[in-house]
Each structure stands twice: as structure tokens, then as C-alpha cells.
Amino acid sequence: MDTEDSGKLASFLKEAEVKVVWREEDKTKVGRGMITNDDKNFVYLTGEKGTVIVNKHDIIAIKQ
Image 1 (tube, one colour):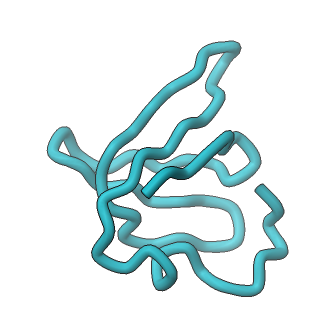
Image 2: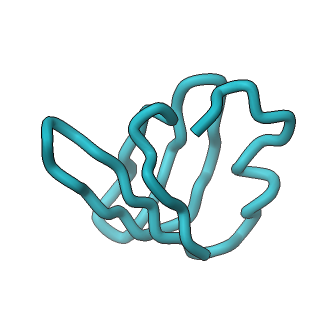
């Protein structure tokens, strides 16, 4: 994803359950939950197993 996005993901996907797919060390990872916050470099995804912080450069897809 481009870090120069004009809007924030957290406000765009407010209170929406999403699935985030990202690449981590040659593996594809999937997280399900709500995007609670995001900044210039990171997305904070909170689900039933806890919170994961994902680098925006590593995100492959976000599905609502």
C-alpha cells in the first residue's frame, strides 16, 4: 500500500470487521478483526486473539 494515502484506514473502516493479508518473512499471514488505528507506517488490527501491528508496505489485501 502507498503510505501517502490521503485518508486514514481506521476512520474509513470504522467499526467494520475486516480480513488483512500481509507478507512476513516469505510467508503469507492473515488477520481478522477491526482496524483500531493506523499511522503513516503501521496498521493496528485487533481481533479475538489480540492486537497485531502490520507494516503498510507488507499488506497485500484488506477485505471487508
